[in-house]
Image (cartoon, rainbow, N blue to C red):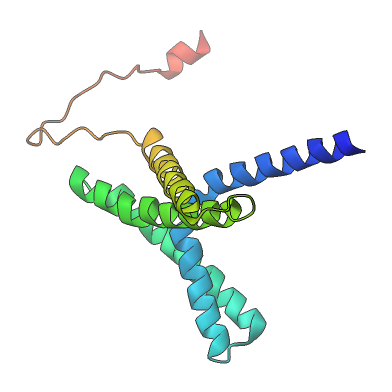
Length: 161
């Protein structure tokens, strides 16, 4: 029983860490959804209305961030949007998660702060890597010149052969 408990505990901690790193990119839409949902609940929208308003606001924030990142052509603007949208909220969330987990075993406040800062750097860096891993740089417009790439032409006569 002890071995099963240790194995399940290790699996649970591993799953929790994977979840933190996988969802760090979506920290800002989650923060917006929770803040707007709690504000709507406080203002009398009810539980269902607050959930609906929170989900819609989080989805709109995610869509707006992805749209502005996809449409912007300037590399500097894209870096600024990615930093504000994902890296800073992910680092803040990572700091608080690691600080809360370090309170379980670490007695010294200095070491808890040090672990939390390292966790913020790791989770913020992971969010940055996830954003930039699949991003392709666009070719710059070369003064309106359009390349003509030859396309194979299939005619009806070729299909019948």
